[in-house]
Length: 409
Image 1 (cartoon, rainbow, N blue to C red):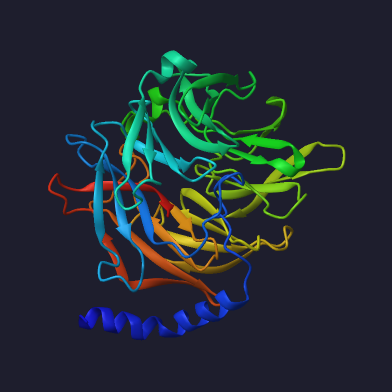
Image 2 (cartoon, rainbow, N blue to C red):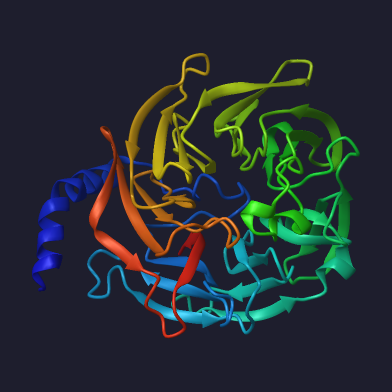
């Protein structure tokens, strides 16, 4: 055994023993907290990590990287496969599972392509089975952002209209990729970004960013007045907008409380450097307020399985913050880590004990010179960066790659 592997195991042995004890008493693992509630749960500890990667200089094809994340594997922490997506310059961004967890839908912010990837036949060597190319022609929208699983369907939120401007909207597809219908944003909320559903309340929420013709510009040329502030609340079954509220500038991720019938949730307002909370009352009306100020440019937001903590990646201040939100009137900063320059996307395991991290936001916003995947352990005393898990995304034959969204298998 290599001495680095031995050192890592000795350092992490207490954590491993605690994890083993927890396995003996805890309920079966659930799907990761920030996936759609309709996605089939992961039945055991993760074996593979899928990372959606943009070729850094956009000259070579984008790809999906497969990383071995089994601690006992001789290839632990290594990229064991690359799935070439067949084209460059897509700005591959967010991706999500179908409800049966057999396929990943990968969205692209520049080309508006959607890649449907089979991860069931051979999980360690996934393959593209379909590319939906004419998205603007089919839906009237550009820049598919959040692929959100429904039973037998995928709900996609878009960032802009067919011409790259506004209004944005949503569209539904069958799991095989066939288009079903488009869903228009209300006139008072023309921006789009994320979508999340609370099935037990029959509610859906959407958030706001900026359209293709703005975010595709270099950062210095972006119009920061052309960003949304709106959260829209919907009747989920009817796909009907009910109420639109104003939050901080650029509310991004939508996270409903994980507790059954709990009628509140959270969003990270990237250009307001804050987390906001929405709360519903008995009459069905919602209100929204600032919950806490964060570090600079909070780009991603995740939840612990027990609904106690929020994790926010502060892209502009190089930190990840853990907030205790068990008391919505008195949120508390519980711990902070600095995993590297510009941490962005996070993915928390179903047991809430491990968090994978990447550091690319958008090619027009990135300022880092190196890209990576890191791991943090989450315990009773907060987050700790794993000193041994560091996947280098700079040494591909095609040069550096910008790792963005992640999924576990």
